[in-house]
Picture 1 (tube, helix red, strand yellow):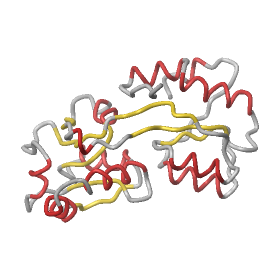
Picture 2: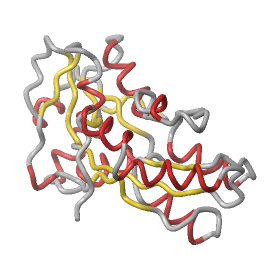
Picture 3: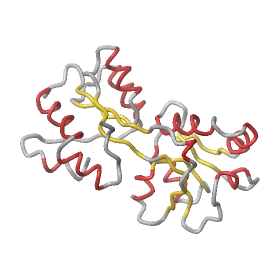
Length: 210
């Protein structure tokens, strides 16, 4: 989004990045950005049901992966149950945390329990998980493949079995009471087909189905 912001000459885009749940909470408290985009569709749909957001559109998808450092001996999920492994995941309230728990719940109970027993950190966003990994404070974490790609090789993405893959979809809409509703709608449309859609594909995000 930072890369595509310069392609909107008729509007000055100010981007604020935080956990999707934190941004949604701010809107519920009366903060009025023009656009809200989240790493899931649940939060935009809830805000829409509350009359705080236009009908959301799905604008991107992402791949859910297990991230480890480049030199890690961890090769898969079973390695996460070893006594000395420390895992960082997203908190329950943020999309990455929801996706993580949704996926782990599909595992055999003993494997799920063994992995969760080694969780040492529940982070408020993906940035926190990536930070723990790159700083050596965690050995593995569940994130999106685009976040691993952005580390320039410092981290490696281990693909998960297809049966565990959650449907990681991103939704966005125009906030009710937006100061610039027309520009906001143009930006949301551009997330699906436009400069920001192109930037998302370049960064490794998938296109929405349909």
